[in-house]
Length: 184
Image (cartoon, rainbow, N blue to C red):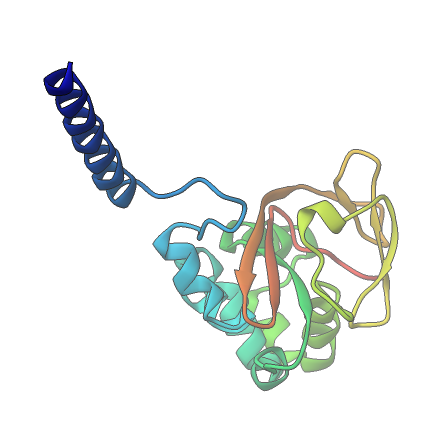
């Protein structure tokens, strides 16, 4: 009987040790679980650096630089929500407006207004869960509408899809969109 108890306690001890070793190898599933490594790296970048780190935003980055907005968007104390159009979205906008990239970039007031229409500044960044149907005031002082379907509608009635959400940054969040928003 005593030998059975010792064997049981020994087996239990080995099982606990094995489970403990497995627990150290596997991440704990908890609400505060850290995101994958690439997200941790992005979360240490401001919204400009997030855009710079993705080649799909090279035209956006060029536009921000041409408009002289890099410093403002890198503000560590800001809380920006950026609706970031891809390079393809910019090419589509060029065709739609009949402008070349050089013409757009040379018109700094227009470029600044268009870029400001993609930025919402507030007390906190708007993650996907915070984006509700209704009107939003942008940094360009123009109105952007969020539809009941979760799309964006610019002042010209054009709808824009949000194709990726919640890319974190130190001073806000970036949402990827498939068209350039155009204010009136």
